[in-house]
Length: 446
Image (cartoon, rainbow, N blue to C red; front, side, top):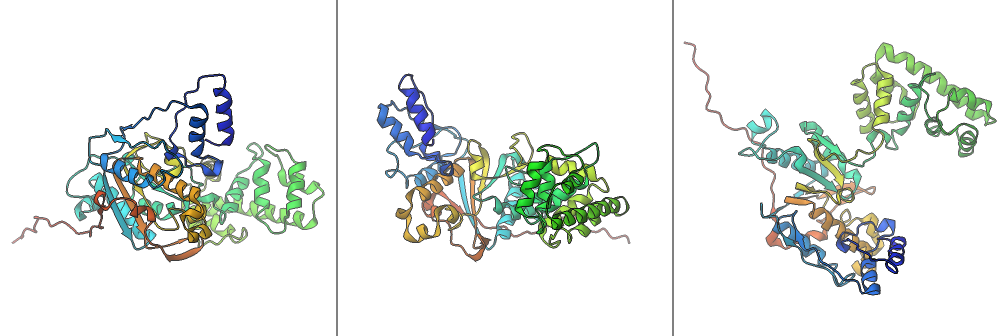
């Protein structure tokens, strides 16, 4: 609840009966102005009756006890209406595992290995090598969620899942082809696929022009004001008729020539070679992972530029969670609120990453928790939300070193780990891949 919502509810309460449901321990939207104190303000102002819903039917007892121990570090500071949850999920104890990896790549490999074990093996190799565990499990891919504090953590997880052929859905994350380093190529492909009948929005052309240093802010604003907001026929011809700098008109001519050459190259060589050859013109480093990935993706469309452009457009927005999809779910902890999964991984349990240094602040971290109690407490509430998404199994992972926020350094385990009683979790170890012995033997021919 933020200030505006609080004031609106107070106005309604003056003349009407109000029944509000909320959990201060799950107030995780401080960046939108939300504060858990508003719950308490409302209760005190109206002497409101409070009904504590303490029976939890989602998480196993051990998970709830651990989550309660963590969030207890916030109580007494921001609310006096905290209630201890009573577990009603008796299907299992709610196992908790901790695993510390050497690197994000090793962390991702552990996650993949545990998924294979939970599934009882997903291929002949994983079963024969022992990666699939000793017996088949009753899990499906949709039973598993991998959560992280920041979306950029997903990169190595995606690579590991793709390498092992594990299906996944990544939720509310900007698609890789819209990353800053490669974004101009997306607009280029959209523009190249344009025809007289299938026009595209002025915004696409403006974003493409923005990738060239010779086209300044004033030129883009002038074009935006003079051209239609929606679909625009003959954008480049119309743009040159507007009184824009000569340098910008030269760039438009150059773009037109290269677009024509690009279209002509595709029927002869295919999409992938054409895209590789145009990256230099667009000032894109062809060696970065996103560039290699889009070239590989384009290869699956052969020579069909329009289908490839349509595919990119369809997937330009973040994926919405599909509970019926037979796939492992990857998402930020913020995105997971309100959902539940039998098995939950929370990755990146490292100091500076969770609690997030970007949110808490380096100066505040150096000064201690008392310097910025609200930010640190919100990070703790976010961890509490992540923990309580798990029904039967919670697996917390970390990496000893990680490149993040532009620095590569050693990262101790998250201080939140210390808030979980040691009796509630086990330290996990990555199993060595070993090939099972077989009783088969080669028969002699003579």
